[in-house]
Amino acid sequence: MPRLPAPRRYLDNAATSWPKPPVVLEAWMDAAARVGATAGRAAYREAAEAEAIRSRARAACGRMLGGVEPARVAFTAGCTIAVNTAITGLLRPGDHVIATAADHNAVLRPLHALERRGIIDLSIVPCDGLGRVDPQAIAAAWRPGSRLVCCTHASNVTGALQDAAAIGGIVRDRGGLFLLDASQTLGQVPFSLPGGGADVVAAPAHKWLLGTGGVGILWCRPGVEPEPLVIGGTGSASDTLDMPAAYPDRLEAGTADVPALAAVDAAIGWLEERSVAAVGAQCRALVRQATVDLAAIPGVRVFAAGDGAPIVSFTVAGHDPAEVAAAVEAIAGVQLRSGIHCAARVHECLGTLPGGTVRASFGPFNSVADVEALAAAVRMIA
Image 1 (tube, rainbow, N blue to C red):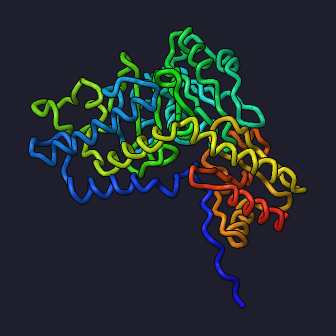
Image 2 (image 1 turned 180 degrees about the vertical axis):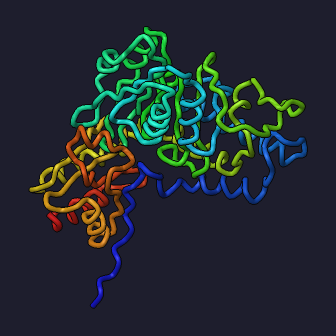
Image 3 (image 1 turned 45 degrees about the horizontal axis):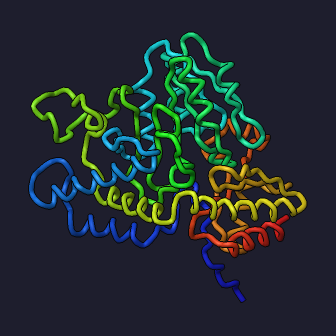
């Protein structure tokens, strides 16, 4: 008889969190079905409500970023756009940039493109075998022309949390700017300092903030004013062909995704009711159990820091990561990600090229049963 399909066990939250809290989908649907207007473009009731939704989302993101001024929070069409806006809008010809091997391609590729065109010089400092970056390596890479340091807050391969406060202090003492990619931490790790100690923070709504797709978050501290990446209508200063000088309008050309902003506001409310610290601790507890269970299987190598994003990566001797992920889903219904995870440089440091790793990432709706199903399937394969 054919085998019945296993129940779906989603362990790819580091890519996109799922499922969403019911209040998130309700807020999205309400804004799409009832409001249905553009924020910041008119004075009729629904347009005013759309602008109120955007304002609430701005304030909620400001709270999550450590109590920063909401007016310094700009929304883009995704975190990759936010990162590109910061990089291209802040760098000048001849600048030297320091990035890390733990960084995602959303950071490294735009920097590499600028380097290839001869606009900037780029140094990439290594990380250790768990994806951690030594802040002193950044200090050692500093040059007279260094202007920007880019660093992921937590590795999307191992979950390793970087010492953002120490890195920020090094950069600040030297008069540079610090861009923190919080894709794997905002909503999982509380920000005790405004902006996590950085000058610029970029993050998506659809990962650990538990929102929907379509929203990137870009915060810049006062005095840091990147040139806009996208030029167009903002609904403000419409009598001039120049983009508005005021933040955040200068970075928000085009039409805001109001339903997605309503969703992220509701998601942050859901997180705040439970506290980011509690939700993160719950998810990291599952990572710790998965780390122990997987490491006990002969032939399995595990890469999990356990202190930042709730991620565990692993390899199975003699098996391609893509084959392992497919087999685990077929056996137990556990959905994983395999490969390089858009972060090739970290795999050089982990020794996991060319195939990369299998990655499991746990969200607030996962359970111990998901860990047990994962370990049991890997045990069968190994």
